[in-house]
Length: 174
Image 1 (cartoon, helix red, strand yellow):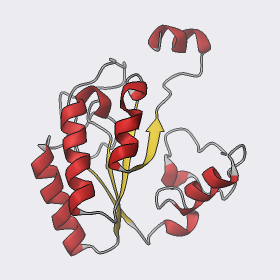
Image 2 (image 1 turned 90 degrees about the horizontal axis):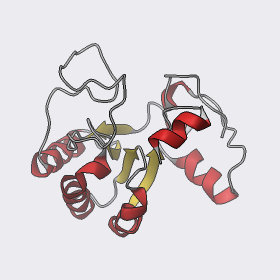
Image 3 (image 1 turned 180 degrees about the vertical axis):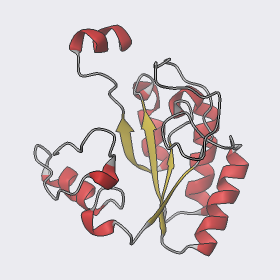
Image 4 (image 1 turned 90 degrees about the vertical axis):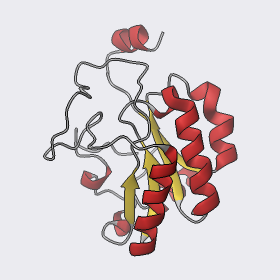
């Protein structure tokens, strides 16, 4: 896939090229509301902050305060219980029929909070079966969770890579 400019996220990536992916992967990416160029402004997406703990301590990640002008990992206004998160998603889905993706990405790492994360995902799948479920993780616990993620129907997993230096990655992910 062609890389997006640093910090721009999927919204800043305006390419229909998914080089290096299999046809099935490219099709999934092209039709996923977060990555589809044609999906912008047609689908609603929401993040549910249910995962406070993290299994890594990045220099840039500061979960100590909330700032309404920030939109980065670790900054949320309210940590939700799984029940609160599902109730919020149901409320948004009732008000905004275009809600098509619900993701869990923190404020910590969702897989460092397996119970909270899977309680939320399971309830979402039961109560909002047509919504795509997504998750963003540093990947350290992904081998332990992949079967459960498939069982609950998670559509897309983003694995963050916080360095391009192999020596640093080896230290972090060893």
